Image (cartoon, rainbow, N blue to C red; front, side, top):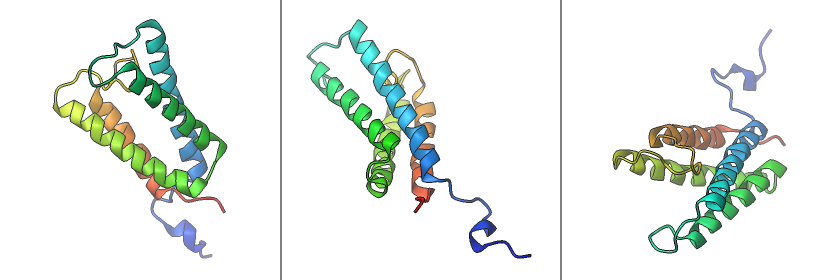
Length: 134
């Protein structure tokens, strides 16, 4: 008996639903951990990362994670996730090659930039390869 054409793949594409839920959890965790850090150790207003910019980043991550979680505009969000996590991977990789100890992605939680680079690449690739349920 022949398998259906879609089941003959060596590695089937992940479902977008799983990818978006996991991505939403990662983004929400990053945003909440940064917000927790800001509540207990506020950033100064000088330097390249001002408190205002940091607040914008946290709010963006929370809104993006909620949009992913609730399935708002799935096609657009799928490609936006690919683009966003490609940028995140580039920033994390830059921090890794410049010798940063932590990427700063998760607030006070220290995570080596190479680990976050790998996480970002995996999420971007899974988003790219995922298929929408229509």
